[in-house]
Amino acid sequence: MVLNLLKKGYHLTHDMAFDTLKWNPLFPNEKNGKAIKYGHISTEHLDHPELDDQLVESLVSSGIPVEDFEIDIPEYHKYLKASNYPDSYFGGGKDETRNFTEKTLEHYVSTKFMQLDSDSLFVDMAACDSPFYQIIKKKFGLQQSFQQDLIYEKGINGNQIGGYGHELPFGENEVDAITLHCSVEHFEGNSDTLFFKAMERQLKPGGRIIILPFYIAYEYTIHVDPIYNLLRNHRVTLDDNERFTLRYSSWYQFYSRHYDTQAIQERILGPCPGLELKIYRVRNFRDVSPKCYLRFVGVLEKRKN
Image (tube, rainbow, N blue to C red):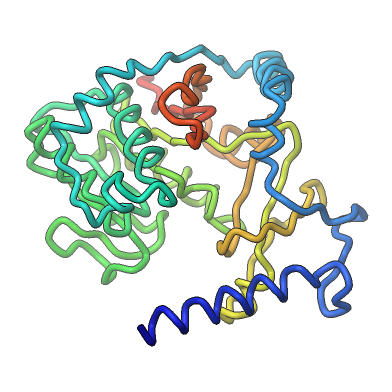
């Protein structure tokens, strides 16, 4: 009871403060010579699919291949039934205000891009309490299946790996597959580039980084929730360039980056020439649920030569 009241009070404080941002002199209304926008750029893309059409044209013209992908919805439901997610995981699908369907859909779709056998080494990055590493361990009979997160004790502790994403304690050419479900976009500052450079070294030739959703947009965008950062005493680290557009979003997250085509080249492919990117455009995610938002999947594969 007391905890629920405190939580409601926290949310009320946050929401009231966020509603006054435009008039609050403590928060800037301009960044990089551009007015700070409000709301999430993904909402624009979901409401206007023609923006994704334009984005795909830009990607392909820059040499990044894009292929359509259709979810096999009956197969997704078979996966869901076989995986036995605990009821505690995003409400177990029973709480419609939670995100169970989107999260489990991301998990299912990521399995479609895995090439694993019993000797493979797999890591689910920024996993928190997700059971996905266990599902993959069982599905492929893996001996080495891990979940990684900053909240865990640093180093390898059983099946958990603690530390930052670029600090995975593996040697060169050891890792077969990495998944990131709603996670790499939260890597602040240059930590995304550091992560991809580390994976370029640690992946086996042919090894893959599977990113779902791959948050890309018509405009290179960073979202912050300034009130959430203030209440959590978090000093956000923005990108060290003047190209991105900053948005204030009331979604209780510190930071989220959406790449445009140029940012993909500058932050991922340019620094990591050993990685090759293919993007999949998911065409029927809304047929699974109107609340789903899995627009794109990014698959980075380490070159074999």
